[in-house]
Amino acid sequence: DTGVSQDPRHKITKRGQNVTFRCDPISEHNRLYWYRQTLGQGPEFLTYFQNEAQLEKSRLLSDRFSAERPKGSFSTLEIQRTEQGDSAMYLCASSLNYGQGSNQPQHFGDGTRLSIL
Amino acid sequence: GDSVTQMEGPVTLSEEAFLTINCTYTATGYPSLFWYVQYPGEGLQLLLKATKADDKGSNKGFEATYRKETTSFHLEKGSVQVSDSAVYFCALSDPVNDYKLSFGAGTTVTVRA
Image (cartoon, rainbow over all chains, first blue to last red):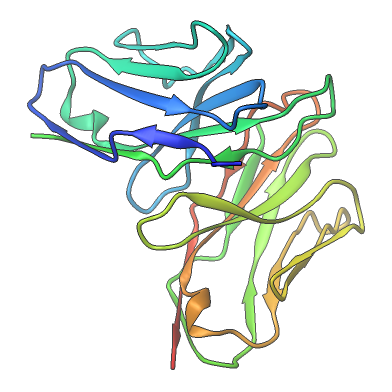
């Protein structure tokens, strides 16, 4: 068990640029989640995948955000035309789900810190 | 909707002191409750959990009991160490929307030697 891996750890970019983050979940986990955490706050749910299917998206996920998990393994989160307000820590988590009501605890990566200049 | 309220920090303690962090929740059903810890520069780690009323979660000397009557899940540790300095988050997931964790704002704990 190598844990959830996120890349890059830090990203600094200019406003208006596009950025993409990658998450590699724990290998046997079928669910993958994205959260956003701003300074002094707890993480906020953005979206999640069950295998390759994106099943839920928060209203926080504007149309500039897109997430994919093409083969049900790693996932990418892309932000287009970045804005100052996108500066945050983006956390990925994964878990094993056996069915309704059997979701195991979520395991988090170390996050990608995004800074918009 | 579901929500979690944690006691505000920061909390500063001396080594071997008793730690309590209050957490109360609002949920429509019977949620699962969690405490996560975030050490400096690291991601969140699951500290303990409880899935039904009166369950007690425990790990690394920390304990929390799921109290349905008071909708609370307070975190306690009898004797803290400098290595317990971290941010602690209370969280819940409801059994219907079990994909989503709702977190409190976090409580920063600093333990001085």
